[in-house]
Length: 157
Image (cartoon, rainbow, N blue to C red; front, side, top):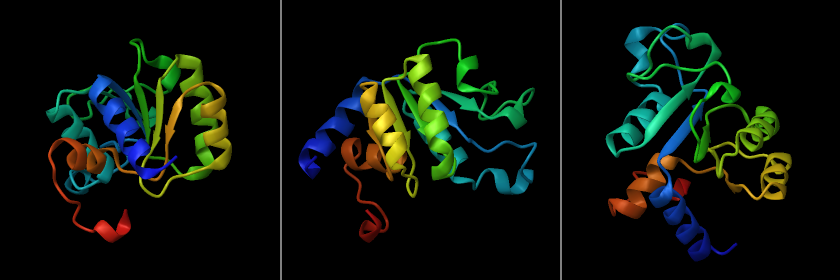
């Protein structure tokens, strides 16, 4: 897909989506509270919430604790509302299983954060007619498309 088509697809995805299940968002239980606010997943979650997205944290180690005001679920299958985007903050090798779960819950988009990509995951998503975005930060893409901001390090794009 050429970059203009990809840009338009991402713009449409972000404009039409309302609910995001964020897999691998950091939790207070597994992190020092002083470092938690600096974790990329927390920064991205809070940013998306500020722009009106409902973000459901998926972290089995955070059950019983709120993350950015939301009750986490242990697994994608535990989400009780329709999910537009499954946003992933987990290692690339874990993403095929996450893709299978995203398919099972009927997600429309599987979004693998910056640095995360997997050919098997992409094939699974595409075979199920799920849009797969790899190796891109959802926050940075939103900023570029809707806030007309340049990223700090454009060479990393």
